[in-house]
Every structure is written in C-alpha cells, then in structure tokens.
Image (cartoon, rainbow, N blue to C red; front, top):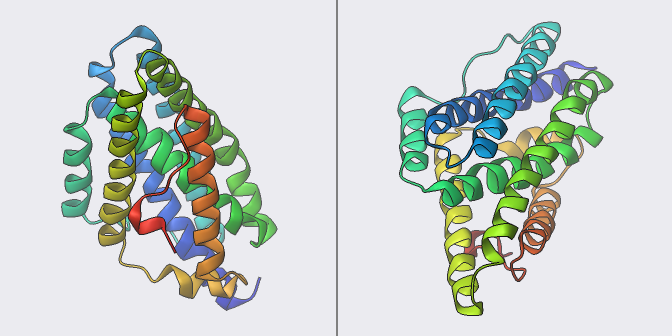
Length: 220
C-alpha cells in the first residue's frame, strides 16, 4: 500500500470506527426505552457487535500507523444523540437501522471493494453484522406497516424520507471531511457512491413495505 492510499484508507476507516462508536452510544441510550424484550435483545446484540467492530478498526488503524482519533466533535455528537432521543421507536429504527446502518453500509461495501486487502478484512465482519442489524429494522417496519391503511403508509413514508434527509444533513455537517478526495485515491467518484446510496435506499424502503422513493437530497 503506497503512502497516499494508506492515508486515504486510514482517514476513511477513522470515520467508520467513530460511527461504530456513535451507534454503540445510540443503542445504549435507547436500551432502557425499547418497547419489548425483542427490541432490548436486538439493541444488546448490536452493542456487542459494535464493540467488536470498533476493536477491529482500532487494531487496523494501528497497523496503518494512524491511531484512532474521534472525527465527530463532542458538540456534534451531542447534537446527533439529542436528535435521536426525540424519536419514537420506529423513528429510531428508521434513523439508525435503516439509515446509518442500512444505507451507510452500502457506501462502506462499495469502498471496501476498491480497498487494500487489509481494509477489506477489517470490514468483512462489520458488513455482515450491519446487514443483520438492518434486517431487524426492516422486519419491525414491515410488521408495523401491515396494520396501516394506504393513507397511513403514505404518511409514514413521508416521515421516513424526512428522517433520512435529517440524518444526511446532520452527518454532513458533523463530518468535516471531503470524502470525494479520499474516494478518488481508491478509484471511486462521488457520483459512484451517490448511485450506490440511491439504489440501497430504494431497496431498503421496498423491503420495509414502502413504495420506493428518495429524499430530496438524494436526487441527482
């Protein structure tokens, strides 16, 4: 791995590791308020998985001689956590399981295919686990929507699209990184990643029981 690739890979991995920590914090905060034993078990499972994911990234960053440092400032971290704390259970699932884990992991998958084998191996287990985490949110939403009228489904779709929009705006403001500069080093263009995001968003919404749609910010 040349120096430029090492720096790009390490920078992107630091972001991913910090998002793992954020997800761990969000699940921990929500755990006492999960509406069922099933929900509590899922959050505990995800907490354990995020610990493993972060440990893998932490070790990999040491190998790259780029020790982990948080990318999110304390202020931005608090802002994101406060936003999540104001969501009900299904808003939380839309934001974390469908949005951050479901749509976000699509970017990680795409980048991984172009990364050095060291990075690919560090992302292998997290990608598997986060697909599982996403599936929990999809199943929960499917069960919820099964009892909704067509009009209620339309209203819930608008709500979820707004949540995706808010997550995008919050993370864009919180992450002071020009991602396209680092993606470019790995042979990826910004447009490639946006296409991946759009495809995964449509798939997740359809699997969750919604009509496929995109938030305003995701439209080219």
